[in-house]
Length: 89
Image 1 (cartoon, rainbow, N blue to C red):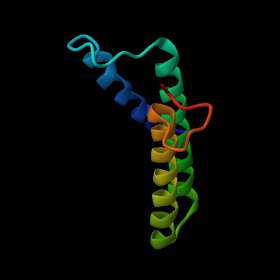
Image 2 (cartoon, one colour):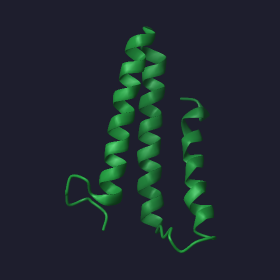
Image 3 (tube, rainbow, N blue to C red):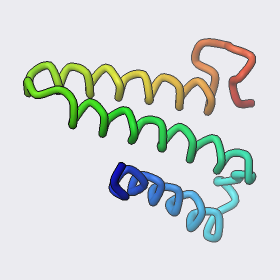
């Protein structure tokens, strides 16, 4: 596994820096850990798809499905679009 898998974790600097400028962003340590885990799993899965699937069209479909799942999980944890017990308040 290459270090490129960890590059999406750099996105966590956006809320970290934003917390210094506004009170609208209020993340706790657990928020950063969960976001980091979600980004890391997405990155590992995307890397696996890119390395193992040779057909470009199939690769695009799998990455799109993975991206949709990522966005749905992120939205559920953030605002609770499905009303699960894991939803944010």
